[in-house]
Image (tube, rainbow, N blue to C red; front, side, top):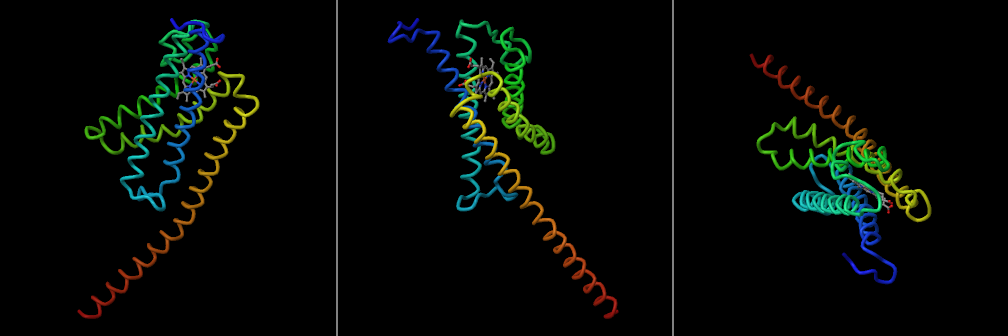
Length: 210
Ligand code: HEM
């Protein structure tokens, strides 16, 4: 047990550690999501080679999971309120703030599924891996709602500004990505028209030669 230094005992230290790691985990998950949304279909970001983007995505995800793990373990170990370890993965299993912590558990479950399928990727079809991986997009709003509901501090002052900032960044990235996709559709249609025109001309040429 930590000595009581300047008014901070072990329970308070665990509580601060849990809160700090929770905030860092949310920021890291936001960065992972933004990277996923902004990356183009070829897996590139302007100015970065493909392997760098993939590496950044993987390392940020693993770092986020490490912070979530410490966040959960410190929340469970801190004896001030009763949070069983099962509450980390089973929604509504916590007598303390069941709904808020349930959202955290759902987000963690999705994250575990995404990591497990990524580790087993070679043994899975691309369709299954992709379907589970897309769930990662759902885990972010759930983690965000958990953060806002589990902590009253996150609903006031600079922490609230931080939470709103992450949400605005995600919304802006989604809008940017949708606009880019909309620009791509007419281009794809143009390519389709060009291809059929080329095939048509080629077909006519063969018919006239015969
Ligand atoms: C992806 C998963 C998760 C993320 C990103 C996350 C993030 C956060 C954030 C940002 C906060 C607010 C911290 C603050 O007040 O300064 C928080 C609060 C909290 N989280 Fe999580 N969390 C996650 C999962 C979980 C899980 C599974 C549990 C269950 C044990 C949990 C337990 C708590 C508790 C008890 C609080 C309230 C701390 C307080 O009293 O202020 N979290 N979380």
